[in-house]
Amino acid sequence: MSSGERKLLLIFGMGCLMIIGIILISLWHYRELIGFLIVGLAILSVLVMLAIRVIQTLTDSIVKIHEQKLRQERLRPNDYGYYEIPLDDAKVPMFPPSNNLQQEKEEPYPHGYVPTQFNRGRKD
Image (cartoon, rainbow, N blue to C red; front, side):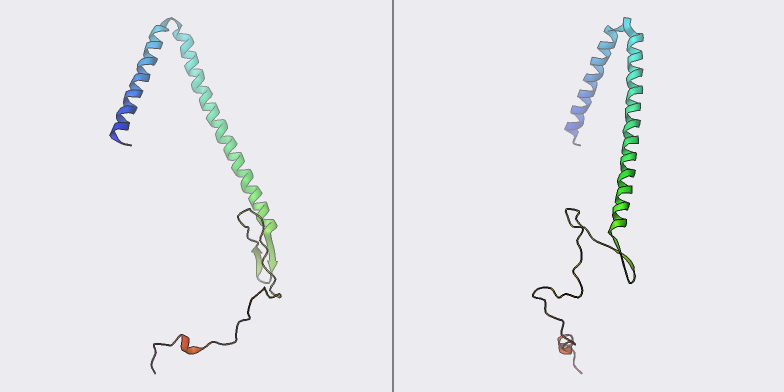
């Protein structure tokens, strides 16, 4: 925050305090009513914050339980235990291609390799 913004915020805060002070002085005869209203608003704001926190906690826990259930549904058994089916960007399961079928335009891996391609700079 720059110094100009700080000054503006300070001036705005002082103006709000002056307006509140003038209103409270002009309503001095109703001080008990205003006091009860201020305390009531404070209690109401605390209750609303607590309710929001409870709702947020419940929502987070429900989402975590739902995610765990979905993950258990995506787990598939294999020879080494379980593996999880990955999801794409749209949260749709992507099933891996079958190992038995060869994909289009896929050439089989040649047996062996040419050793000179890794030992070009080596002199024996």
